[in-house]
Image (cartoon, rainbow, N blue to C red; front, side, top):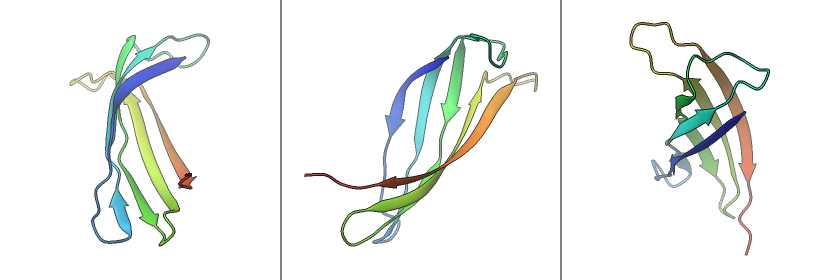
Amino acid sequence: MDGHAGFHGDTALTRRLLPEPAAAVSGYSRAGSERMGSSVLLRPEPGLSCQRADGDRIGLQIAHLFKGDPYGRSQGENWAVVFCSVPVG
């Protein structure tokens, strides 16, 4: 189980291409899943999206959840997410 708080932003690289950096500090409880070695984890999530003229976006976000052990003993999880967002209102 994982709960996190952090930041997410986007900036225009070009009119249509938007880097979407994100990072969080995460509280983790094993609850039958991976043993991570710590209950406080770091979660960098770089992403990139393409925005259409109507505001719709499609993009890719890559994330890594890790303990941050500088000696390489850190276990972690990686994932990639393809997303689509549609503005409302």
